[in-house]
Length: 291
Ligand code: UTP
Image (cartoon, rainbow, N blue to C red; front, side):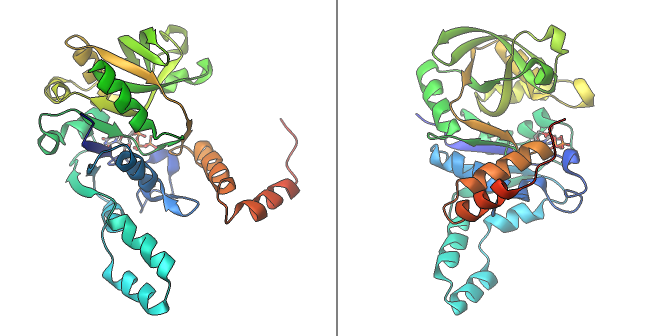
């Protein structure tokens, strides 16, 4: 069965990364030498999704240019005989079939998903928030597709989150039904840590049934005046089972400064061309004492 379409909401302001995101999309910030969103698009493609739908807004043109072919650049690289770079640059524009749709007003993640309803149509689809970079042996979305195929309902990726941070997540109340798999009973967006129903926080990967579109269309603005995906999911839960899956892999919140720094360091240490010199540099660093 699989999942053919993956939606990438990328219309947010990226306020946690200002001023870097004033004039460039946060999705284009590089981890080592690859923009954040390319990691996520590659994950979707490696999970079987062949149609990518990116939700953009004003100031996000660089994303389209990145996945487009660049005749001038390719010509310049060919002339220089830079074959490896040329192949790398070409491969980006050949990754997948990509469509773009504008979210005219940033009314929230739920709204960003809703604007893709005509492009997605009447089939289950994935939503990927590219801020969440997930490094895993089997692509995270691929792991979730397996759960979707087995249980046949929407699937949310979850992670155990320390109590002190749970208030920044959508949180589930759930019953465990198999190794790493839960049946969701309720969801709350950014709860007070004392009221959080569990320590299972929803991270940026979802497989959703198309029923979500009609429900998002009826969802009124919630927390922060935004149309919350979590509110749409609560409505979906009243009609259909929803499952949660504790994925295998390491996640970085690359939309926040500290997560971005951790991802940069760890990704660089995994790179054969950089590891020796970079590790030697890190070892020599004179770190400030722990506070
Ligand atoms: P975030 O909550 O991370 O918001 O949105 P943001 O604007 O991107 O970043 P900060 O928090 O201000 O730094 C979660 C995801 O939903 C998308 C964002 O692009 C991000 O991928 N989003 C959010 C939209 O596409 N539209 C919106 O109206 C809101």
